[in-house]
Amino acid sequence: MTDVTGTANPSTSGTSPGTPGTGRGTPGTPPAKPGLHPDAAHQAAVARLRRAYAAVPPDQPVRLAKRTSNLFRFTGDRRSAGLDVSAFGHVLGVDPASRTAVAGGMTTYEDLVDATLRHDLMPLVVPELKTITLGGAVTGLGLESSSLRNGLPHESVIEMEILTGDGQVVTAADGNSRGALYRGFPNSYGTLGYALSLSIELEPVAPFVHLRHFRFDNPDACLEAVARVAQDGSLSGHRADFVDGTAFSLDEMYLTVGAFSDVAPWLSDYTRERIYYQSIRGPKEDFLTIRDYLWRWDTDWFWCSRAFGLQNSVIRRAWPRRYRRSDTYRRLVALDQRYGLSATMNARRGRPDREFVTQDVEIPVERGAEFLRFFADRVGMSPVWLCPLRLRSDRAWPLYPMRPGQVYVNFGFWGTAALPPGAADGHYNRQIEDQVAALGGHKGLYSTSYYSEDEFSQRYNGAAYAELKRDYDGDGRLPTLYEKCVTVQ
Ligand SMILES: Cc1cc2nc3c(=O)[nH]c(=O)nc-3n(C[C@H](O)[C@H](O)[C@H](O)COP(=O)(O)OP(=O)(O)OC[C@H]3O[C@@H](n4cnc5c(N)ncnc54)[C@H](O)[C@@H]3O)c2cc1C
Image (cartoon, rainbow, N blue to C red):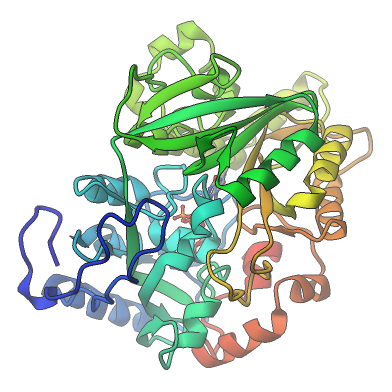
């Protein structure tokens, strides 16, 4: 094991190397399984956290005291005791030989990527907001443009150290005595326990990504192209190491296909005056460093920075570059929600109330065009993000029932929509939930949900969840998944 500064750590060395030169995205020898980092400081932090958790009165709710969040549910229980997890927010080691890393559960992907890129490696899937944490992406189902090749972040977790709801600290790995927890952790949103450290697989990168933006003038053609990429691993001869898409309208949609590249005839930089999502409309080709590619959406939080005026060139120039980041914008939205600023202004100006329609949904690729038409007709927000994905392995994960082998497209839409007269919150989100179900898809749970308890249980495998809850949080110290994601504790 090599630490992030490159120092050999004899306690975890001796792992066998993966197969070099097998090509990116091609499975090589499965990585050796390193033990979780036995670092004394980490172990002491685990012991402290266990004591802190045990000291919370059993009837007091618990939450993670974290600096950042990417949840889009803004109410929370103010009585809750915050667990200080700051000791679990850094990378514990990167091992280039076995292409693995071990990191604290609250390590942001920004820090994780900085550590792995030093070794020309990256996590198999890097969610595009810098402050999403490794534990958050595993328990809350991240995805990104490598997800057609590499599945979801939890599929490249080798093992996890988890503080469970009943106060134990266990190591969960596929097939070990805690294998059920390992498989049930994704989509449990911290209701079974908290991941304190995780070991994950990495893959090699090239220094640059060569992007090509392919335009489509109707959803059917666009979704057919996604299916072709899934089958061929390329589009019009351009290798698809990464693929995602942007729908500006039903007759202006783009798939952006990225290929690792060792050379770059030019390099674009969208952290300055130019804005990445606008660049997609032309020219058709672009080059970014791998780091800028991974964070291409963060500077403008996809396109959501426009709500703060940041796409006006005067405001953009005045807005310090270091604050052109998704976590800054998310904090502003949280403040706005807390004090009801935009709602009050809307009411004063006699404008209709608006509903937050901030969701990610997965639809089988064959039904994706139908979803886009429904969304344009009933909700009408744009742009919409498209991200194809497919499970990496041939086994399903119990709490988020995607079918192995099936290609899905994630549609992401983040903003608000004006409510028609007499309609209340839930007007749009309920229609979306119904349509997603009708098309055989599912919805991520980081934002608002309106399911009844029965429907929720049916959609997210309530029977398997109840067993895990009994085994790992029998006294119900942590909220249930339904309470946390729907009734919002
Ligand atoms: C506008 C928006 C766009 C998004 N787009 C994407 C996207 O494109 N790609 C993508 O991958 N994801 C996306 N997400 C979803 C995001 O990945 C999830 O919300 C993820 O859970 C956030 O992780 P976090 O580390 O910020 O956790 P938080 O927001 O702090 O917490 C999320 C939940 O996870 C739990 N949790 C956090 N850390 C742990 C841990 N270590 N162990 C157990 N439970 C934990 C918390 O208790 C909480 O319930 C988006 C979210 C938003 C709001």
